[in-house]
Image 1 (cartoon, rainbow, N blue to C red):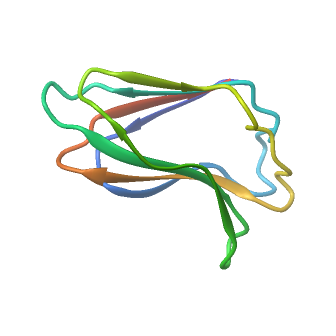
Image 2 (tube, rainbow, N blue to C red; image 1 turned 90 degrees about the vertical axis):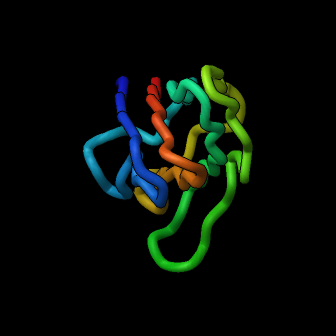
Length: 99
């Protein structure tokens, strides 16, 4: 399984949808900030779709030109949770690869 997302706006993006066709078994999430000058603040969490969310990372600053690689504690029950990412910052330009 590989999921590729290009994120060019702030806000919340659902990466894997609860009960969707993608697996919740994840080995690695790579988040690349492709901006030439702007940092991005990123939170990645599993979320039940109503009110409960658990951060995998919370409010982590990724400087311009830097790639963050997450490899620990990423698998989740996709029958109960979405995987989503919230981005803040000025004109983010992020690539996300999930394997």
